[in-house]
Amino acid sequence: MQRSLQLRALDEHVRTLLPSPCADHCRLANIRGGILSLAAESPAWASRLRFHAPQILRDLRQNAHLQVNKVHVLVSPTRASVERPRRRRADLSHKSASLLHDTALNINDPQLRAALFRIARRGRGSQ
Image (cartoon, helix red, strand yellow):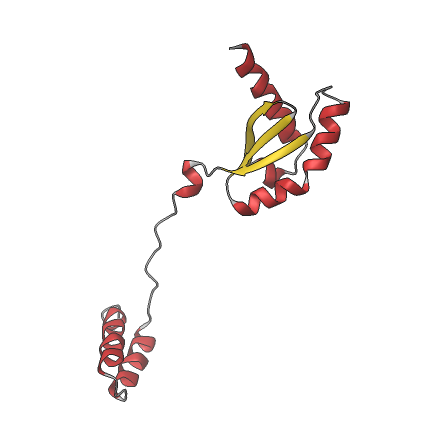
């Protein structure tokens, strides 16, 4: 229980050292053997976090009096970052649908022609 409380306090401290967007997308994973492990939600956030590693090391040594020699950054997506919002089907105006339909009439390739007709049907019923 004591270690959990220490890790939570250290996590909060490390987050205060980071700019707001970066702090919101990373968290403390562990500290052991002089290595501070931080988890980022994506490779992009991990890269940004690595950029701040020297500052984090300097602060933890000077202000928190921790013997930290290295910052290890790993990618560990949270459930919220993995779940992607469902994409909404793009709206197709009546005019665009008519243009696609007219274009399909002049296409020789049967598969492309059928595909254009299918897309055009999506917009024809909208008006």
